[in-house]
Length: 412
Image (cartoon, rainbow, N blue to C red; front, side):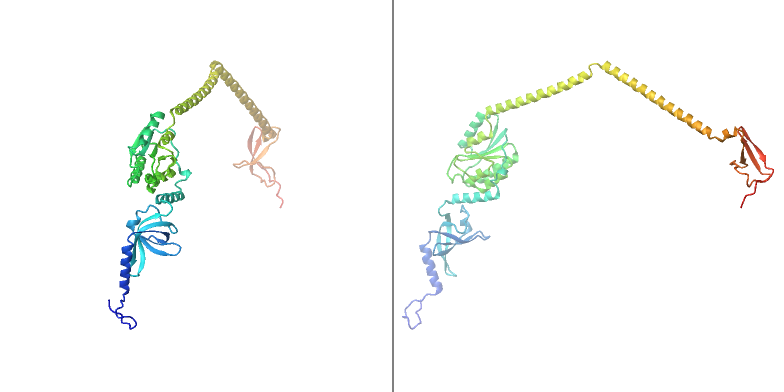
């Protein structure tokens, strides 16, 4: 290290460069704080497209920057937010270019509530806001299913319990098992595939998604968002029977019906044999009453037809008599009409004969007509000329004549 050139310092006083000091601080911090747990409140949280998380942790008096890379934050089971109290595990580091101390976080857990429970509450609130829990989207169960699809482990007690209930209550109902893992990383994917296959094949009327009891960690497959959305997308009704009666999962809220246990799910799907027999008896009674009523109505209609056809000869004679009456009435009406027409014609002839000029000629009168094609009658002597030819009409014929003198002159 070069000596200090200042005259006020001893010649052997060491002087550090900024870079050297930063390197020393970085070495001290990283060697002594290689793994540290820190409690604090999240603030300034940023999640860019790179997938890394940038944030700060603070308490009442201090604040420190932190980063959690994508490879580490993929294991966080809840969604961090500003204002949350968290426990973080990581190592302290010093950013050389700026001399800032920051934490490289490897693990993060909620402080005061388990990460699994917090993730459960966050997903539940989000799906509820989307309407996946709404009552109006729940599908009704078929009253008498012919086949049931069961999604569960092939080795657990669930399968035995459901088979026992079906043998006791409805031995004729077909049970189709789709074995899946019910816990572990691969369980959600297998459950989603089973739901999709049952809907695609359409061989069942209703589905039961079930597993036995377990801890919150054991039931995580049924708190997976992928499983919840697969249940919501199912066209077939889905009954959830997850864990014990006090256990609730996200699948229970999305399913069309929740059963407290797998055995209860089977009892909800199929009715008791006695109940079925009672229902069949009721249907039989309704059918018999309906048939009796229909038969009685048909008999009444038949009796009415028989009464109408009991004496066909009398009916035919009555129709013949009626036809005779109608014919006589028609002939009488036609004769009366014809008589009235004859009377009207005779009266018209009398009137016409009374107005005829021939009747006047028969009393000794003569009609003088012009000598032309129209034979127009002459009503006055004025204008006639001597030698003019005319016709004289008598009641029994007409003869020609010629005037011997002129008629009176016409007055101007």
